[in-house]
Image (cartoon, rainbow, N blue to C red):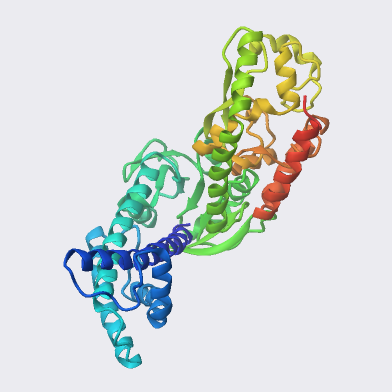
Length: 485
């Protein structure tokens, strides 16, 4: 849980640091030239001109320095602990380490110059590069820390925990979570199986119920993970609870014996000295999720710009042909039951929800979903934009906000979720999307249970490659309007 996120942050910080160090290496060439011009110093060897072509020539002539500057900085940074305890170490300590790395790097480069007899390599350039790198790395680190803190402050990337247990070790666990709020962990409540504990507060958190109440609590509160910190004597009591969490796609962490789970993948982690076994029904590496989110942002921004004329034409067509707003907003259920506002172009008459009751007997979909081919509530423009899937375009805003992904299970209405069977709730364990396997396989022609099975197949077999294949299929489905109503 935390260990994997820390490893991901380490790799992310190293990648960004590498970019900053390379940028400093280039900038130092131009800063060196500027300093020499201002103070009328002698010209630098191999510096033919203050241009990028001039820098390439300089870097080629100083090849040992060009080859070693990045590995030297990264190796020293790692060795001096710059990438340890990233989210818990004071920022001033980071500054101290970066300055130490800079000083030692100068000694390393001096040794390289001496061994290879690089007498023409500018010492002023090395000093300029070192100071530039130190300043840029400090600025970069500060901006990254501010960004991570803002992400957690606004509730993004926050993990809601339900802690099972109130004993001494459970209390120690809670104290660690509270002491490291910048890790993005939040305790929602506690579970204790002893009589008379309901409603009591332990370490500032309320006991919400007993073990048998957990399935009910999962439906009423946004829970991202259930963590068991309990005595071994509780082992025989927890079978049903573990299975209930698995059915609903809620990851669990426990430091006891394995369970015979059919879906969840098991892995061992360590939470600040607490050995945990994690049971997760959706498994993906942090870097894969990072790329998925990065592509969501790039795709949504690009497509919003490209389809701006379509937005304008559609908005005018809706406004000129029917009374009411251009956009339609509706509360939907996201990851693990999080509520968010979904946006669409309005394709129905005003008050369509009120008239739905009179049409329920004509529903052409089984299950809790309502669909009909010739819905009288759909406007003339609405039929066109539904056929071409243009009504879905405003959901790119939801993707940009982080409520949805480009590819993922379609977001259901909260009232539909209430009617789900237990096994169907597991589709909520992944961020909803604009398109998914169901979208490219016939949509409304598919029975509801098969639709749910498709979503679970997507979750169980997820990969970046699968997302790409679905996107390609979506293009052709939209082009020919297959399955849209």
